[in-house]
Length: 259
Ligand SMILES: [Zn+2]
Image 1 (cartoon, rainbow, N blue to C red):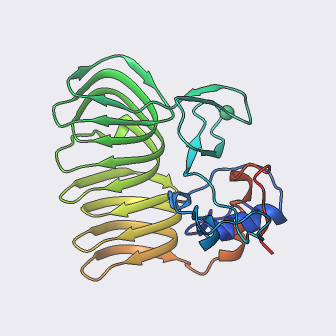
Image 2: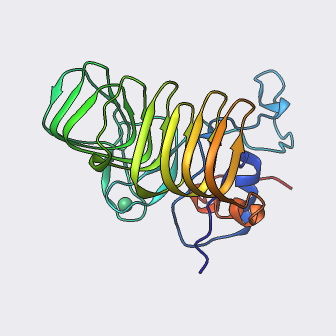
């Protein structure tokens, strides 16, 4: 089965080249927001650009990875908008970012980011978003992060009240998960005790500590990071293939002139 670990760090150029060469079934991607930095050729400056000049690389606006909350399809959008449409299932996706500062018991769905501040209390509310930053507490309800759930040290989060594609455990955060979780990417800046199956990359930063059981496509432990776990990691697991899996995330109509 071809469902191996997904793309990890891919620069914009590689992504574009892969786009040119391949076309495959759409799928999740675990790449971080690396696409925000596109390489610029010197000819892109207003003064340096001359008519008819051969431009080696196309400069594009900032891109964002969006995951459809209806079908789960991941795609890349260029520029900012308040709404877009999933290219796979056609669902119109709201992209607004929201901040919750008090008690919340409603339903909130966005393909943008939701921030629950340290005064926020999720009490019966259901939050579906691409990214969720949790500083507050979850009493009841549910958080569904299609991309990344970041849990800060002030947060309270019962482990059965969320799902997330990727996790970021903030500095000073202690998170203890008794269930086995499948995730794409994990950043550990605090303390995480869990049984994790990480398809992409887990990074344990300086001062972070992972305990438990770990199976990861790629493992990075910074100096001063702690790891006390049964670990299976295969960091050289098909990096080229992984990069090529990125290709469908760029719309094919981008003008390319790479080689
Ligand atoms: Zn969709």
